[in-house]
Amino acid sequence: MLLIFVSSIAIVILYKYIPIPVTPLMLERRISEGSPINYRWTPIDKITTDLPLAVVASEDNLFTTHNGFDFEQIRIAQEEARKGKRLRGASTISQQTAKNVFLWNGRSWVRKGLEAYFTLLIEAIWGKERIMEVYLNCIEMGNGIYGAAAVADKHFGTTPAKLTRAQCALIAATLPNPRKYSSKRPSKYMLRRQKAILKNMKNIGRVRFDE
Image (tube, rainbow, N blue to C red; front, side, top):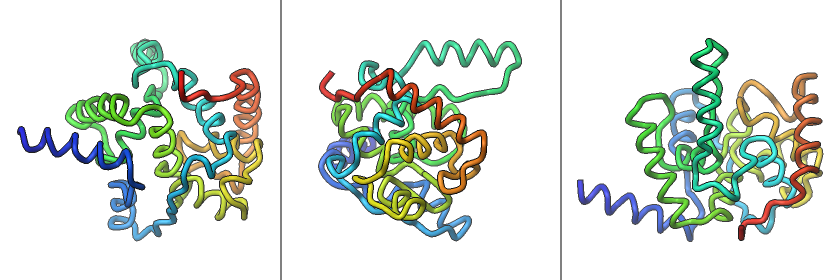
């Protein structure tokens, strides 16, 4: 147990400084489905600032101020579930990053416990800017498409630095289910989500990682 504990901290420290080589989800999709792995690491300063703004506006409005968990959203999700409403996620960007980089896909109390553990570690060791950098590089953004560089190239024929504000909002709109929703061929529902995200981006203004 001590070895596992020390190893987990060591890998988190290592990943603070080096690009993530591959994630468990990438390997899972590759092995089980034969999906390609379209993935190229891009430093955050080579990604337009509109993309982190878009994902914050869509996924986690309190990203820069919470400690890894949005307890109000968790409470709301639990209350909605008790009322029989459709289950929805309440995971923060930090939690999603911890899950994507260190854990397997699926639902179990063990995995959720490990997700909370790794979330606390990356919040303490990485900080917000590094968490966002890893998130934007490793998050699934389409079938076999991982991260800003791959989706910018495959769906828009451009680079992460040259994505437009509207394109960033469209990418963010897919993130609840990027295998169902496509930023390349958006449905009417997707376009409505894009419009709402653009409005929220305007309200937020900018993402400040030093807060």
